[in-house]
Length: 154
Image (cartoon, rainbow, N blue to C red; front, side):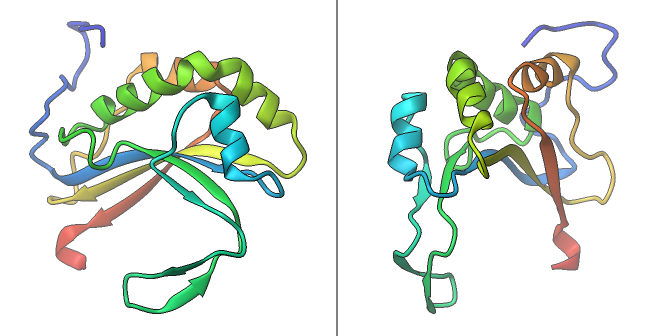
């Protein structure tokens, strides 16, 4: 990541207002098997859901997967509490796949985007993105969403 002196928020792995953060590339391939996504991107997902299979959720209930999914997450790979470092990890992995992502984006009913999870300790001083990350997401034609949680409200 480029260090620019005019930036208000320097990168900080100990980001004091954050309890936990991570980012995930979410690809919902409709009728395409998630293994085909792996083949196209040449990246192994951190998780995949295959329609029709059964899994046990966090509360012990068995559920049938209704929607296939291919997911690549920084959770468990990056320990920093600065979302920018998670995004850099993900974007470095998927940037070489630009052509494959563009091809997937032309398929009917295939949806994708980057989801950022931020668990706030303080209720202020939230996540920051730098233009470099936004430019890469734009080049990859990926939307970016945020799931923000407040630890004290849980």
